[in-house]
Structures are given as structure tokens and as C-alpha cells.
Image (cartoon, rainbow, N blue to C red; front, side, top):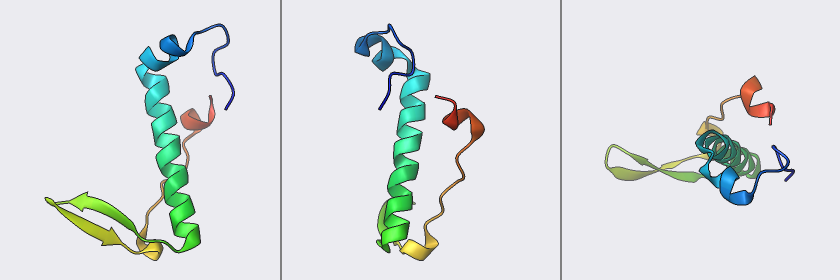
Length: 70
């Protein structure tokens, strides 16, 4: 992974909530895509219980322009 803002320490990156949220959003999206492509189900928490979602039912939102601009 490349440094999105050269000259900033890793502590400054960690404190940047927006940057952290972007990274988490991209990571979750990538994980969902990998599960879907591999045909693996995922477990989610829904209405107070664990629910299994079949690979063909996994919804992956398209990557937004703002997420690509890192």
C-alpha cells in the first residue's frame, strides 16, 4: 500500500478518521468480492442473530469515485 499523504507519520494516519474509514470500506468490499468470487458464504449479524449469506446473495456495492481517490 502506498502512502496517501507523504510526510505524515503512521500515528497521524491512524488519527485521520476519514482515511481509516476509507481503508476499512475498501478492505470490506475486497473481502466480500473475494468470498463471492470463490463461492464462499459469509456470516452476518442480523436482527440479533448470526445469518449465513450464500455467495450468490452477497451484495457488493460499486466502488465510489471518492474511494478511488486515495
